[in-house]
Length: 362
Image (cartoon, rainbow, N blue to C red):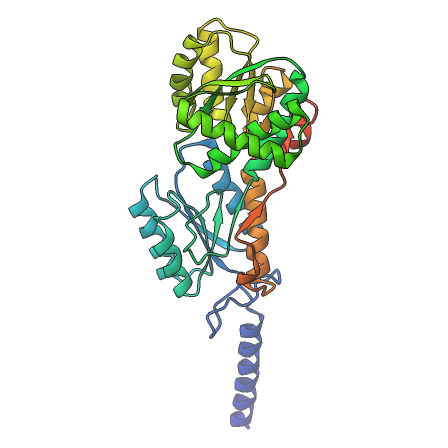
């Protein structure tokens, strides 16, 4: 009789242990290496984010946004900062591969230098989604998500052309770095929008004229379109920062005191230009950025001290990147089905609509 009772108790304990094991849904790894459901019914995926640097508000906000949106999905996120070092960037991606993450987000330092690392991840069965910066054509990545630099610039240029009407535009432009693709797109976008608006030509014709203007700027250091009453009397290289933007603007402003406009490829360099203008005692110069979206710029737009900037929101880039990651990891969408480039919606942020975009600034 005691033996029977002991057997019954043992059987009951075994059932309880099985039930307890079935109820554990904390997102453990299954035998196929995929993650099982967590207590919220989602998937506990491991995500790596290889960021190029944290030296500006944009990159800090991009990291925060990726973490926020990924963690809302219940994913575990690890961020590794390369601090502008391509060797460190390669090491960081190797670390993610060794950790067996499910997906890698990447903001690359140099387009071509990172290609071997992306392809190693692909060989290991780990997809790579680029955020903010594009990579070389040989990379076996999923897609690159960033703001529409060309159309952001064009929309800002159109808005500025409407503001100026038939008035002369005498400008300088602050650019980030020679050969930078995003900077070139933003710059020619600004030119295209201004020419399209001032001349009343088609968008196609405006892009053609903008390319010619940029070629002229590259070869001669200045450029103009007489019919549009639009000239760029100098170009400075501000390395995307306020400090270098100040330095680049000082000499140009001294040489060209009769400016109507300072154009720029991002907000930070233009903040430096505003200081240079103030130091030179020059007022009533329009500040026009092809793209960025810093909240400091939005505040200045509200105050009427900054004409416009194109929306380059790290939050919207991160949001779209996480959406694509979810489609692949959770919904099972084919990673090869995505276009090479995936763009966020472009917008010219002016005094008329700044409140609409403010929460997505950085």
